[in-house]
Length: 292
Ligand code: G4P
Image 1 (cartoon, rainbow, N blue to C red):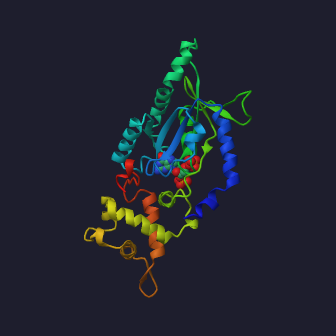
Image 2: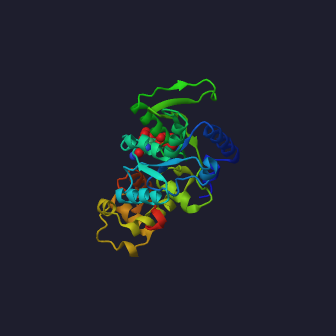
Image 3: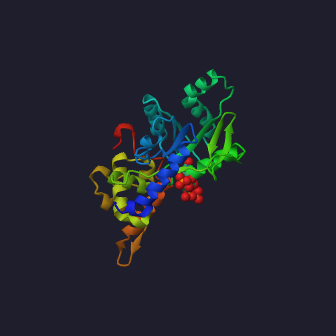
């Protein structure tokens, strides 16, 4: 799946976005990194640590409505053990966003205290959103700015075009997100991004991708997946994933002339249903690779 890198990103583009992020970073005190709660490893950028250096960060496990709840809790605990604050959010409905100001205050605590000790009564903290494409950056900004009755203002003295809105009495957010890139050279990362639809299907072989998804689902055996395709009788461990794709296609009546199964259509249907969480709330990546 190495084609991925030629489609969404190319070196010039990456250099430009990197520069934009570096410029915006100078204006903020902390960073909110959005990841997809179903794939918290693959949806992170390998370059973010270097870019933000030691600026405080909050991780937002977005799309938690489509991820397994137990898995999301495990991720939050995992980050907590590393000293990183993470919260689960659903930027489509807005669920979980009320925890955001508190989470930022937690990671900014020492800076806020330092500034207060210097005599500042209510130091204003500025934050920006970063994340790879499709993780929900714009959804987050739209939701949180609406929830906070977006007081967007142009500030003299900062880069033209940068706008800020107020989230709480001591928190402002930059309205433009920093777009990062995933780890292109890792095939598993490419596959997982493709499972969730973060990478467009046109650049991938859908049948191959569906087979890879079935390799995973066969092992995990989510109840909704089994019920939905009536696979109760099947020994999933001993069924080849391509055969399984055919079985699923047949159960859905996806035939082409001559009675052959239309595996292409079956693959598209399977991926669509997975992406819409119709096969269950499924987290693909677990802390320490436990479900792999
Ligand atoms: P980006 O700025 O990081 O590129 O992501 P964006 O907000 O555009 O979100 C990408 C897609 O993910 C959008 O769907 C958006 O609605 C969806 N999305 C974002 N957050 C959540 C969430 O918490 N839960 C769910 N279920 N979906 C979320 P789309 O299909 O591209 O558009 P549309 O369906 O909203 O029209």
